[in-house]
Structure formats: C-alpha cells, structure tokens
Amino acid sequence: MTDTSTRVPPRRPGGLPEGTRVMLDPRVRVHGSVVLGGSPWGVARLAPAALALVARARVDGPHGTLPQTLAERSAADLLVERGVLHPVVTPRSSRVEIVVPAYGRPDLLDACLASLTRSAPGGDVLVVDDASPTDEVAAVARAHGARLLRHPENRGPAAARNTGLAATTGDVVAFVDADVAVPRGWLDGLVPLFDDPRVGAVAPRVLPRSRSRTLLARHELARSALDMGARRELVRHGSPLGFLPSATLLVRRSALADAGRGRGGAGFDEEMRVGEDVDLVWRLLGAGWHVRYEPAVEVHHEMRVVPGQWARRRFEYGTSAAALDDRHPGRLAPARVSAWNLAAVACMLAGRPRTGAAVALAATAALAQRLRSADVDPVLAGYVVGKGLLADGAALGHALRREWWPVGLVVLAASARSGGDGLGGGAGDPAGGRGAGRVGRRTARTAAAAMLVPVALEWVRTRPDVDPARYAALRLVEDAAYGSGVLASAGRQRRLRVLVPEVRLPNLPRWGRQGPSSGGRRT
Image (tube, rainbow, N blue to C red; front, side):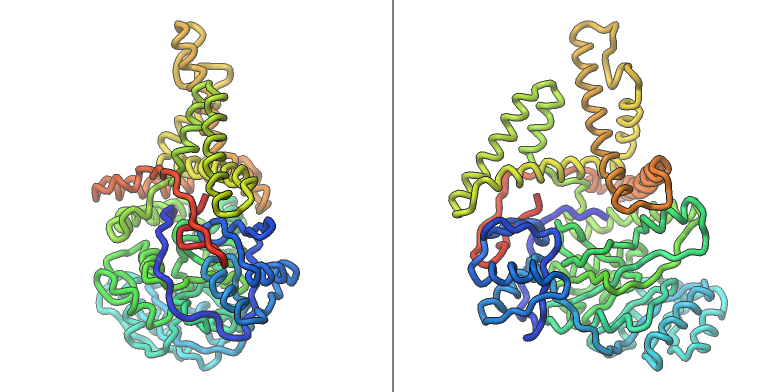
C-alpha cells in the first residue's frame, strides 16, 4: 500500500510521561541549528532547548537521553510528535486481553495459542471462530484454555476482530492473527508505549517463518509484505511508513471510539475483506492519534510459499485500493511528485539538459530564498532539491512496477533492445524520426533505471539468499500482481483516481522555533 498524501492531522492533547527517555531518529540530519527529517520529512530550525536535547540524543544513541528541563520536555513532546525523536521503552510486565480471529487452519492456531500461553501464562485470550468448516478450531481453543466465540456464518477477519472487541473490556486490546507466533514477554515492550496518552495503536515487527527453502521462501524471508523494517517509525501519511498490518496490532479502545465507526461495525470496517487494517490506521491518524511501530519486538508469521497463493494474495491486497479511495479520497495516488522535478526531468529527456538544469537551479533558488527569509542557511536548498529529485524518481519507478506495470513492461522491453529502435524512430527514419527515437530510447532507459535501481539497492542492503537477477524478477512479479489488483478494483468500481499521479506545486514548510511545523512535507 502506498500512501502519498501529507495532510496533517489535528494534534492531540497530552505528552510523554515524566522520566521518558528519547532517542534521535537515525535518519535525521542536523546542520547547525537546523534538523532535516521526521515523519513526514521536513526542515526545522530549533530553539536552544530543542537543539541541546537533540545534541545529547545524538551522543547517547539508542539508550536515549532524558529531557532535563521544562523547556526540554516541551521540545521532546513536539519532536516526538514530528517523528524526529522516538520514546525509548522501558519494558515492564504487561497483560492485556488478546483477540485471535480464526478460520480453519487449526495447526497454525495451535502454534499461535501455545506461544501466547508461554508468553503470558493465564492471560486472557479470546478466539473468535469465523464459521470454520469443522470443529477443530473450537477443540484447539478449548485445549489451550482460551475463551471461544463462534460466528454462525463467515463474515471476514474485520467482523471477527469486532466481535472480540465487543466481548472484551480492557483499555488496550491486542489483535493477533491465528497464523502468528509470539515470543515470551512480547507485550512488555509494546504496552508501555501507551503511557503516552497520544498513542492510539502500536505494532511489533512481523517477520516471516517457514521450514521451506525454495526460491520463493528465501525471497519472502527478505521481502515479506508484513515486515515493515528494522527502524522505529511514527506512522504518518506521507512518511516512510504510512500504515501497519493487523497481523499483530495493539489498539487503545478509546482511540477506536474516537476514530469513528467503520462501515458495517465499530472498529474495523466489516465491509472490507482486505485493507481493513489500513482503513483503521488511517482513521486513527485522521483523528489525530499517534500510531507507533516498534521493531524491537518481533513476532513471526507463517509465509505463503506456494507461488499461486503468494501471487493471489498480492493481487488481493491490491484490490483494496478502490475501497480505500472511497473511504479516504486522494490518499492512494500511485505517485506524488513535484512539478519542478517533472519539468526538469522532461527537459533532460527531451535532449535539453541545459534547460533542465536551469529548472532545477530555479527550484533551488526559490527554496534558498524561503530558507533565507526564515533565517536558515540557504546552502541546504541544494540538498533538499536533490533529495526531492531522487525521491520523485523512485516514486515514479515504483508506480511503473506496480499500478502502471503494463507500461513498465513496455519500458523494460524497449530499454533492453541492443543498439536498436527504442520507442520510436530508427536508422532509416527521417531526421525527425531519428530524433524522436533518441528521445524514446533515453526515456525508456531512464524509466527502466527508476524501476530497477531501487530494487538493486534493496538487494545490496538486505543481501537475501537469492541471486540479484531472480530477486529482481520476483520483485517485478510481486509488484505486478499487486498492481493488477489495483487495476481490477479501479475498473470494477470506476475509481480511476487511484491510477493518476498527483503533481504538487511548490509547497514549502512553514518554520517553527522548536521543531517542524504542521506545514512540513516530504520531499
């Protein structure tokens, strides 16, 4: 799922409990009194108290630093709000009510409940059997001492979770899918995050598990769709992490009530068989709640390693796009790019590199003027513009692999032609045709690079047990399967907006003395 909108939700009252240590997000860059980073990415000039806090946090690292004055505590609250700082959790013994939606697959449910029993003996676990075809789910639940509710007919995972929610009373409820196994003490590192009254939901890292060693299994170990990565994140629209899966998700009950009802029921939207977790997280964000991702806690999810099932599941994920666009208009543009950057790249592809460079320089000069007026070093303008060019190129390449994959396939085929025609014109064409051919070849090669370079960098970063060529091929198949689901849902529900990129006009952040303002944007 790609969320490219940067509309900022309302701020919620409250802040970090006194005594909470904070750590600096490792992607944040500090230049003098200016920080670059956060969720979504932005630029901010810091007040002295905030600057002192950030400086200590850089030195103290993951252990975190403690705000020492009232001004530093205020700065910490604001910088946590913007994703520049993250709270450091002190694990403590925790128990919450756990809801496990289940449909068939009793062997996986057995492993799930066994892990829950080991991690929290005597814990309150409720299994909601969503009309499984046999009585085995009920037998497994009883064997592990779990409470059991059963739907008379299959209503989907959203309805099963809502049934569990209505049958529990705790302030925090944990939803754990039946194909997930948890480690001992897994709640101890997640529940303390709710000490911040602004936090509405928290999720751990969901890692894949399988005994298979097939090519697809090895690929999934490095590229599971449920694995959100190794970095702590404040989930936000327009940020590196814009949603969380519900395979394992802890939610504050009052936040669910505040976020409103989904269609078909309170909590999760019962009309959605896929994408209901994205919808819930987005409603929480829209109501101003913080949603946090804590990868220090890891749970394990059974992988789908049968090729047909794997591709079908990616397709199903994609089919949620139209329903999500219906509920959250404009959130799912396949790419959101700057008009400046589009103009610069278009000029370069048309064989006018000087004009393209002039456009990029004009964008840099405009940003430098804004920075100067905000008393920020205008030298940062070049960095920001360059970062934006790379980010927009990656966004377009991502769309060419997914929602626009038929066009991407043509691009890859054209770019692979050796010394040939490209996308138009050849050696025997008139001069105009030859010029068009050169532009076509240049465009195809540039677009192919935008598609494949991020995949290559991903392989270098993760070093999966798959050779680069087959890794790239599986990534293209995976993205095309998801994109096919988007195309199918867009056609069926006439939601073509999910296929149209959003071109943003210059919209620079407003500046604050403590941290990024509500106008900060991803570049």
